[in-house]
Length: 165
Image (cartoon, rainbow, N blue to C red):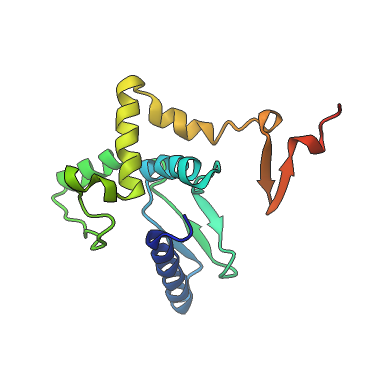
């Protein structure tokens, strides 16, 4: 995932935001990630990154000391944001990136991974209407006693470290 243009672009944008916030004398940046982004990220990390990972609602920057990133819409569903936008007759800027543009069925092979996750979640929802909540709760209910391995503070651990045979 770290080689994808989306990952690289996001890192560059984030770096610019942090630098500009610092220039303005700010110590926080707020991003517009919402609930759907969170669960899509969980699935992408599992299916394409071979890890259980999510975006945190709040974190300290590791590259910009004293800066914090917050996601105030973390628990707000995308559909609710769109409904609020429509109710208030607002227009949001559209991303000009060719990787996130609406994709026709013929171009499905070139679909962004995030769009792929949206469609996968929609399919899962037909089987289980609580799928989004369950995906979200899965990263909240991690049972380390039943994990083969995990990473904490950058250090990798394995169940055999504590296994008494």
